[in-house]
Image (cartoon, rainbow, N blue to C red):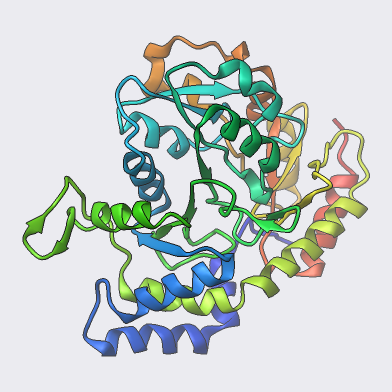
Length: 365
């Protein structure tokens, strides 16, 4: 049996008629940018999360970049970010000419809240926790520290749509919550798309200006903005996907429970989950000593895996001038060298899970 890492077409086929009806509705409307579908999705997603505002943009990366900008963070300012994350979480800081300050990670592969206070200086303006793999960071502790020091909190929610910490959804703790709707995400579009959510009226208005050339009225450009707008077809399809998000997340958790309960191999370390967290398993990361050998073994047995993220941003080539060493953040370095993501998506079958489990349990380091 062959098990693909992901098969996006299965998600489309599962709700094919609804997606096609939504796309055609948008196409037939004759209005393709900032129209009724975008407005409806923004209201529906804000309602799902329980926040006042949702501002759609054209990618999760733009959601992050514009959020940093909307808060007035720039040259001379510092933003604390996890040392193990996708580089977009750092690009949003450097694109605004601010300085990322890295925090090592805890046993859950998330920002170590206990490391934060030692990193705060008089230049620190924000904390940017990343809810990696589908699990919300220790947000109550992070918010307590942020409040104590008067800092903004920007949540990177690119992988945690619907995940909660103490029954509160990721993206609703901080000043701003940033979402990606990249096709592989728990709530995925059919192309690039993103959004920022907030309860702050003034920030919401600022973000709406920033995404649309700094303009409320055509040709009246009030601030320096950019073009970052979700199109109507993506918004229409996301409305359909949102209607099925909870059932898809439930299925992800059911499949993940099978991995957690049935994988019994001392050479394969399973992900740890906080007792306060409701995980949505955008990814299912395991830790192995010899990643190349493990991936080669899995592929020989018909199972495709991936790695997230093999080069921490603090040692990325584009930031080589920072002169960090891998071991400056030992936990992040370990995960970067040893993490392997198993197949995990809502349309994965039980037969595929069973085959994957059996192959893993037979693995010898």
